[in-house]
Amino acid sequence: MARRGLGRWALALLAGLAVALAACGGGGGDDSLGTVTIGPDEPVRIRSLLSITGASSLGDPLRHSIRMAVDDFNRVHGHEIELGETIDSMCSPEGGAASARQVIADAHVLGVIGTSCSAAAVAASPLLTEAGLVMISPSNTSPALTSDLAGNAASDYHAAYFRVSNNDLYQARAVAGFAYNELGLRRMTAIHDGDPYTSALVSAFADAFRALGGEVPATAVIAKGDADMTAALAQFAAAEPEGVFFPLFRAEASHFIRQAREFDGLEDAQFIGGSAILVSEFLALPETEGVYFAGPESDLRGNFNQATGKTSGDVLAAYEAGFGGPPTTPYWAHAYDATTLLLTAIQRAATRDDGNFFTRALGIDEEGTLRVSRADIREAIRQVSNDGTQFDGRQLDGFHGLTGVLRCDDFGDCAQGLQNIYHHADASVTDPAKLPVVYRFEP
Figure 1: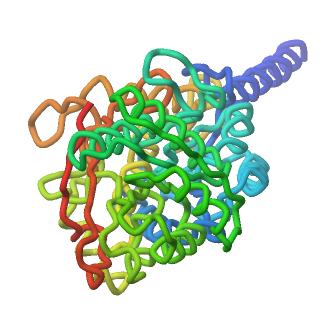
Figure 2: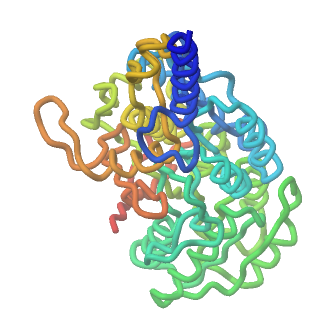
Figure 3: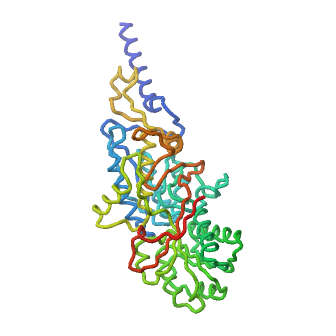
């Protein structure tokens, strides 16, 4: 009788130990941010936060590319990938915060692709970081989200934030160098709408242009949703600029360029736009003919994504076939790369739990269970992009994506800073990839 009682006590102890081990993720990896357990028949769950309203010209192309990347990656250690419906981050702090909270409410989500806009990221990033999640943005560019590129964290940097698009300090230098050295401009004005993207870019541009010897006699500020640009244009005309930098979003930029073309005193000014308006909808406006645009590389021939083995040509052809035409923004490729970088990191961070001594004895764990430390995902993103991996029999230097080689620094900047200046010389050309490159910037 005593022995049978001892057996029951031992069995209870074993069960308690098994439950404790299961709760701790099986004892593997850094569990400081929590561990997600994925059962044998359960999917690996990620989410996307994109601007479906707000900067909608980015939303659909990015959403399509993310879906294609998930389909091409296919599975993580045999588990299906569940993307779910895109959550609208609305290109605003309010939208970013609300969409982040929606993701955080699901304890099984392992990471986020997004946001589209820097304004949404400023609010989403601290919430997701505190919750232990990671986010990788395809198109945020504000320097405030990462660093000053000189080793100092920026005001809105948080540890779970990464991006595969360029820090706008590079775009500012590219625009300033092109305007000063190639166009020979010495007086430039600039306009922003108070958004973290537009305001930071204008400030960085002004610093870079002045450092070259140029003047920025006027900077105008409008509000999101403004349609009447008269006050800003009058301010510019009074400053007698040779050029105008207007890194606005599409709605406000459309009003601005239409009215600027007819405004007295600005007839001879050169206009340079930012990457947010390097989209087909804006290029279709007749008034944009002659405008220069700063933006990422659009000629991706020869690039491939190491996670899926797809070339840029493969993915672009599939996009055009699946969605009835080419992407309307260059950031489609960044969305594909951001998704595969996240999934590669999850795959590296995941450990397959085939049961330990105690749990096998009790039949608690089943073969095929994954345990994924959220802290390990964060670290794996940096490892994958920096330590090199084998692909097709050769050692790679960084994570090779459709957009080029990605190497994430300590503040989440993964892109290498390459920037192009495009010239919209022909109003009939609305595909960003077909605009001629007139200037290349490389750090």
